[in-house]
Length: 99
Image 1 (cartoon, rainbow, N blue to C red):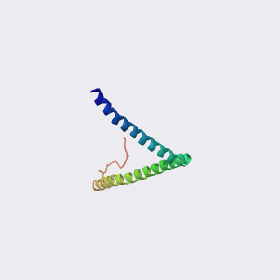
Image 2: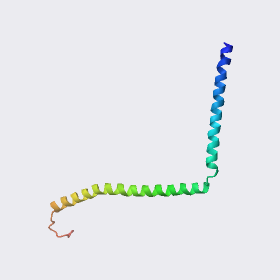
Image 3: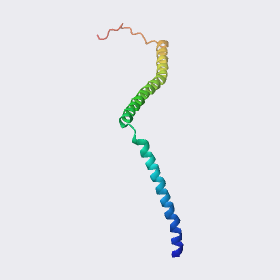
């Protein structure tokens, strides 16, 4: 049984070594790719992205408001039409109240 575990541990150790080498290579490539990166430019671009996102949100809110406004406008027109069709009753006191 002990011999079987020793035989199985060698491929496992070899696999672990290969995974570690692959990971090291990827980290080294990532470090080389970001080594010459201008972090101030990245920060400025991040700020610009935030400004653009806020502008898009404002435009979307305006568009949504326009879409909702049509329904409200239609309701107001119907209410006006109903008021014109049913004029208020005339009072006999001509606007005067009291005795």
